Image (cartoon, rainbow, N blue to C red; front, side, top):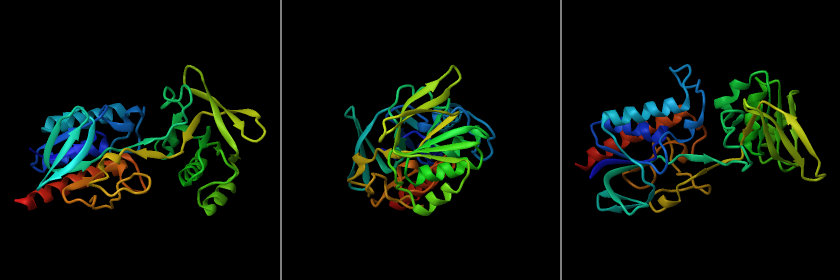
Length: 305
C-alpha cells in the first residue's frame, strides 16, 4: 500500500512525486512510455524561472533523478483503470498488475495533434514546434508560419508577429473558429499573411532543419512554396483520460474538469498538469499543479487517520 500513486512521469507527475515524498508520504509513479513528457524533445528551455537555458532532456532528467533520489518509486507500466475499494484506490495496469494507494494523482498530460507529414517528428526542435510561447523567441526577425484555425493558432500568430519578420497563418477553411475580434486584430498586423483554404502538404529541410513548406490550395489545387525558418502547429491537443471516466469528471474534449484545487470529483483522486482543464499549459504551471496536488493528497491522507 502506497500513500500516493501518481499516473504520469512528466513535469507535473515528477513534481508531484517530489512534493509527496517531501511531505513524508510514499510515492509510486506509473508511466506508460518515457519520463519527461513532451518537453523532453525541446532543445532549449529559456522561460523557466531561475534557469536561463536548459535542454528539455536535461530538465526532465533532473526532475526524474531528484524524485528517485528522494525515494519515489518509478515504474514503467501503462495504467488502464482506477477503482475504489473502501477508503483506498486500486490502480490497474496493462500487464495485469494492481497497485493500492490511499490517494491518486492523474498527471497523464496531453499530446499535441500532428500534421502527420513525413519528417515532422524528426524536425521537432529543428524548425517544427507545437508551442509558440515556448519557442517563438528562437525565431526573432525570421519568417515563420502557423497552422490552425482556432483561438490558439490566432493567438500564436499575433504573439509571433511581435518578434518575427513575417508570419503566415495557414488554415484549411476560409473562416476561423477563433473569436472574430481576435481574427480582426490579427488582420491589422502588416507582417501577417493569411493563407486560407489551404493545407500543408510537404516539409522541406536541409542538414540544419526546416527550410520551407509546400502549401496546396484546396479550391484551385495550386501548390506554393513558403520559405520559412519555423512552423508552429496549432491544431489542438488530445488528452488520454478515457480510462479514468469512472472516477474523474471529463469535459467534451476528454480533459479532467478541475480548477486550481485540482479536485476530480472523487475524494482522494486529484489531477495535475496538461491533462486538466486550464488556459495556460507551460512547464511552470505543470510544476505548480504537481506541488498543489501532492500537498492536497497529503492533507487528504492525514484526514483519514
